Amino acid sequence: MSEGRGALRFRRLWQVLGAALVVAVIGLSLTPTPPQPLGFDGADKLEHLFAYGVLMGWYMQLYATVRARAAIAAALVALGISLEILQALGGARTYDLADMAANGSGVLLTWALLPAPATAILHTIEARLRRG
Image 1 (cartoon, rainbow, N blue to C red):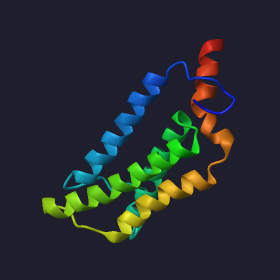
Image 2 (cartoon, helix red, strand yellow):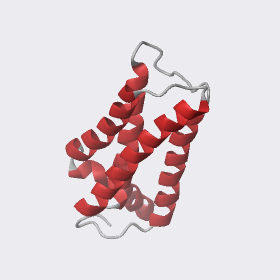
Image 3 (spheres, helix red, strand yellow):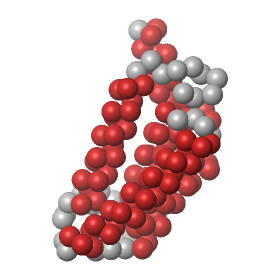
């Protein structure tokens, strides 16, 4: 629940969609030939930063306490590290400390810089659905 906004009516749906985002990041991280939408040198670091920033921003909307957000941040950073290790073990991709740094930076920058109104997107969607 977010501070001062009440419970999300479709919380379970938002949790399932968040899990789907995590599964998508895992799949894209472990596929031998991931898409390269930006296509310039170093672009993958921006993609890592963005992907983990989106995950953190999504879960910040579902869990508002500092303790919960710290746990989410830790879990996402651990996910990024684990996926890099799995890439190295799989042989088709390479282990990259810069990717780990980009993943963690996406998490931490989003947590630190995302203003409170931006963490109310799901509440806004639900309010508009109620007005129908």
